[in-house]
Amino acid sequence: MTKFSVLSNGFKALMPLNIQMFATTANTSVTVQSGAGSNSTKPNAWYDKLLLQLLVQTDWYHSRFAQERPMPARSGDTINFRKIKKLEPSLAPLNEGITPDGLNGQLEAISAVTAQYGDWMLFTDIVDVTVVDPVVEEYTKELARSAREKIDKLVRKELHAGTNVFYANKKASRVTVAAGDIPKIDDFRKMALAMKKAFVAPAVDGKYVVLISPETAFDLMDDPKFVKAYEIGQNNKPFIKGEVADVYGIKFVEVPNAMVFEGEGASAVDVHSALMLGQRCYGITKIKGNGDIQTITKGLGSEGSGDPLNQRQSIGWKINAFVAKRLYEEGICRYEHVPSNA
Image (cartoon, rainbow, N blue to C red; front, side, top):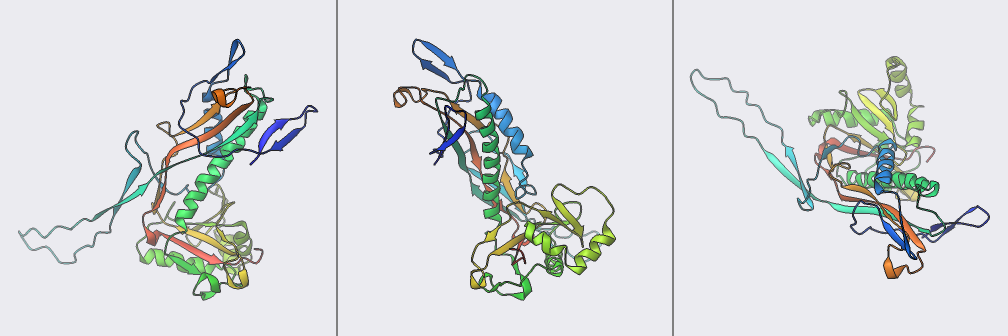
């Protein structure tokens, strides 16, 4: 663990930093006592605004194509997603004057238990928090990036816990995937075909979405079928953010932290995973709104007798209720392979 300090020569130094779950606290100014007088930090609202703005701007994609469900205040820790099963049409013709039997709708409730998440950083009393200090502001930016990465990895973990999987080069399991089992565009076409046959709706703009690592994108650019389709279909329309290409009815989106199963392939090779997604196939609780994400600052001396010399202050973030849940297994398929540059 590290904490931040400023040396007398003006250079910055890293020392042990405490990172743990925050306890509940009010989103107000923190007043700290110093001798006979008092001193107030800037309101948390400033940091909330900065944190949320950066949360939106940070490029993480695993939660991007989810359906969002807000969590009302004081509603417990469990959220229910509704899964509507496909109706099976009757092919029998109508008989004159006779009302046919109606279709039977099936609605499945999928429950998920939410949890709190958060991180915080401890600073020494050398850092001045009576104004919006540049040091604290810069670390608020880093906390925002870290918060989004944490949330993204939670969603990624849930998506990769599914049962729908396709292995490169016709391999039968992850432990048999080896060096040379590089990604091929035909494999993705087969995955998309399977989703169509399962009546899975495309994720966006009538296209399925595949989240791929930079290494996977590198290999696809050398696949002759990929290159040919890309050149024919390239019409200079704007891509969605992060999109590498739109070919064969599939949008390929490069993500900075695609899942890699380190050392789990043949001969302990790293196995990369690409995710193909259909429409509304997973859900998450909403990140913003109802005060469920906040910045928390603690001023010098806020620990009371635990900080008798006013030496410690902190800043952190907390989300009160978050969970990701797979809803339609047939609409989520991971593709395990070994890129040539892995």
